[in-house]
Amino acid sequence: MPRIEKLTTSAAADGVPLLQSISIAVEPGEVHGVIGPSGSGKTLLARALSGLVTLAAGGLTSSDERAVRVAVVPADGPPCALNVRELATLTGGQQEALPVPLRRMSLALLQRGVRQRAMANLLASSSPGLLVVDDPEFASVEEVRAWRETLSVSEVRAVPVLLLSRSEVPLAALCSTMHVLFDGRVIASGRTSALVPGAEVLARKRYA
Image (cartoon, rainbow, N blue to C red):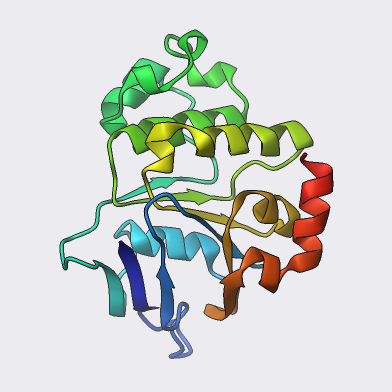
């Protein structure tokens, strides 16, 4: 089980770390949501987990003390200049993880949400220790339902998943557990039904 333990980034110009003592544990097969407004640190968390940001303390460990490989779907999705075959090679994923019509397509022909989900499927098929999706596309009911379908695929179900978004109701539709990120700190965590019960009720109605 991957555990984010007291993850703290290097200090900003004012001497205060941008991310401070973040702790989250995600079981294999679980989908957790990190909810927070713009500027709360969601994208910085994704970058820190992927090793692109210097840490001052803490980090990502596993219950067996082995290193955890993190796969990140960026907010913009994969580069449009690639085709799906090239993306599979880049991610180490298996094209068979994707629907047949997508396997030979140029990513430039696909909308952001479709590109994100294609990349999520390919990354999950490479068996990472943690899959992180930064700002998944939730612009419509159909998009959220498509994410639900993606997260139900067997390769994805076997991987711990962290979805980072400012959209509470779509996250409530997809995540068993939520963490509230504000000003670089996790200020609340809990089961979705307990932490944001109103959003969960609305999600059931909207995305049924």
